[in-house]
Amino acid sequence: MRAKTLLPLLFIIVLGITAAASTTTNNSIINSTQLQSYAQKIPAPPSNFFQEILNFIAQAYNWLVGLIQNILQATLLKQDPSLATTYANIIAWLVPLTAIYIILTLVEVARKYLGYIIAAGWIFLIVVLLLAH
Image 1: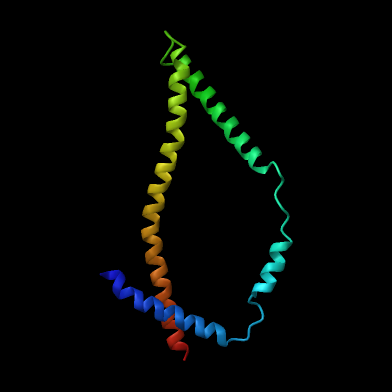
Image 2: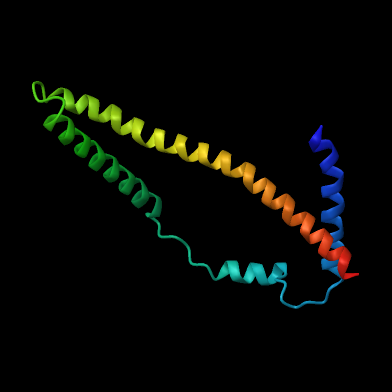
């Protein structure tokens, strides 16, 4: 319901800003040919770039498993250290998944506040544009 009322308003705002931007003669705006020339100047990544990324991720995973395994062998699994390898692998999978979940939760909360900031910014911009005329 709320999206249906905001959609026409957002369309009018974007249309007005686009019309205002097209009537200005500012040379600081980058056109498509300039953008293409800049894109051609970007060097290509090395041929083994993705291989190096995967190698780094594998090394980080092995380091995390080793760290968890040493902690488990020294603390909880003193009687049977062979179980530490199994539990370390499971914990090493759960740690990054939990971190990703926490980050996504924080992003979801921040998204709501970012929406308020964006809405306030658009309203402020419209008011300034109306007062400028």
